[in-house]
Length: 95
Image (cartoon, rainbow, N blue to C red; front, side):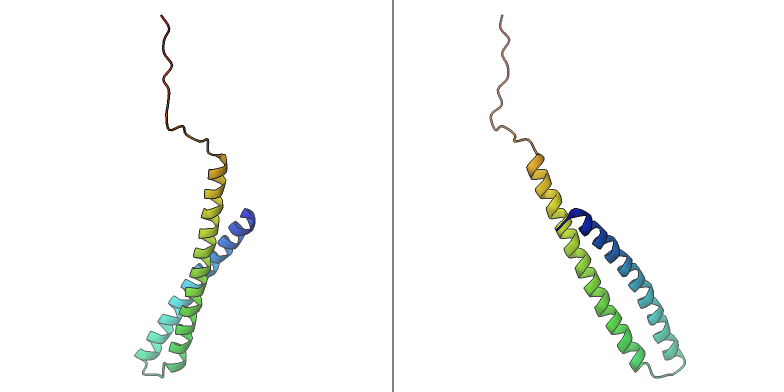
């Protein structure tokens, strides 16, 4: 997968996670409000659980993209690193 495509996907995933976190917070507040008012919270709680499952999916997707990006960086680093000699010789001064 192309690095630019991964970065774009990662940015989109981060946005979805941030939006999801705000929506989950609002839904929790709504469930709390319903509880305070003595209303039925069944549907609101079910929606909250679904939102949380979706958020977990978004987080897992983001983490997979991070792993792919890290793998590309590691592969690139392995290709460009200069091999290090195990035995280093020290130049001798001729007198």
